[in-house]
Amino acid sequence: MSARLERWRKRRSTTSWRRLTNVRATQLLRSATVLVLSLCAADAPVRRGRMTCAVVHSPGGLFVLEDVVPPEVCSQLAVKMLADAAAIVAHGGWATRGEFGHGHLQLGQPRMAPHVHPSIVANGIVEQVVVAILRRPAVLGFCNGNCAMPGSGIQRLHMDDQWDYHSAKEAAAAGEPWPHRTTSVHVNVCPTGDVSEHNGATEVWPGSHKWHTAPRNNVDPLADAAFIEEHRRLQPPTRNCFPAGAVVFRDARIWVSTPAYPAGTRALWAEH
Image (cartoon, rainbow, N blue to C red):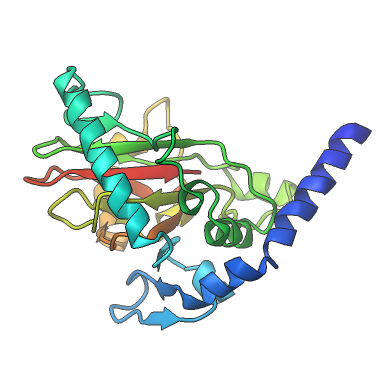
């Protein structure tokens, strides 16, 4: 590693960890509501107070932190996002793309005033939680969104990131446990209101970040019905419903898809 790169790494690390002691962000975190999805027990409690490691490192690989984005920010952005979605559809944006079925629009965060808010693009709570999960400084590598429109099709089962190591031997050589720890965190925010089964709540497979998934003979195992059903018996999927203003954190290896649904418009922003 060059001396310049090493100095940059140390400076980045110091800056990121200094954010963890930011007084204002810590005060906000104390007032937030932590809702751990029912991953291990059906009666997972709603917890108030400072985030703890036990909550951050949820065994299921995902959790929801409520009351992070102010209601007035969500209300303003909802008007903008719904207008943008309507404009895209009017210009022929209703089409199948990639792993998405028809009616899934590529619609990320607005990048112009007055729609850019610190609580979205530079949220101290989100930064703290992500760094705590990764146990190292974080780098933002993706920032976009998917807007599911009424009557949209199915988004196929997929992962938002891949495994860094593909065997216990590879992980051990890198000093990692097996299955290896979280190395990429996927963050979701929905500015258009509560997310429910009626407007496109993502189907998530809790614990699937522990199931090694890699192409076999150049075939994606998540396209293999038998492979999927085998794991459905181990841990069936659930719907990731959460209120407006909440933020969802999940290991990017979690299996996800979006079933077809009858009504509502849901703009879901994603960062990782």
